[in-house]
Picture 1 (tube, rainbow, N blue to C red):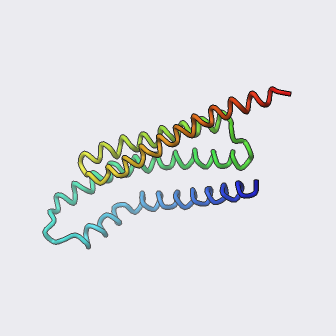
Picture 2: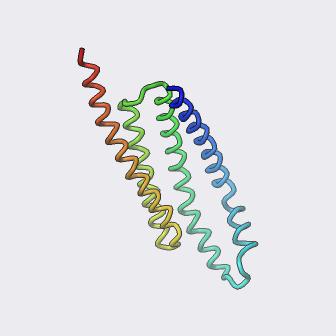
Picture 3: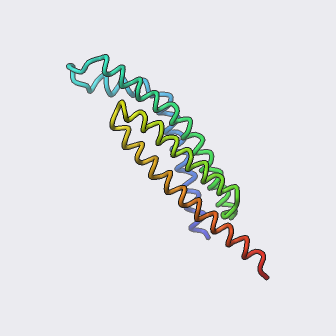
Length: 155
């Protein structure tokens, strides 16, 4: 039981770090973008292309950051419930379903962005993969909850 509590604490700490990273990226994106493409690009690169790239990335980044905040909220709530030994509950199943849908939404946004900027396809594929894994975990939780409910009814 103590190892589980330790991993939950570590996961909660990582959620805080990810929250800070998402916030930093959200606030500093224009500066980070200019620092990378303003100083490290070859002189022959067209400035219209750089502006087009900035617009494309920001159209994907800002909605995905909003989805990341929602996913972090659900993940923290799920981890807090697990820390309280409330594991196979309807609330946790709902959080897993929401997390899966949020990953699929990131898949759609970055998938559309990858039409314009192909490297976003990597993010899109990763979001789809994680969304599918979360969907499978949710199905496992549904079955475990059913078994847990049956076991609570037996004497």
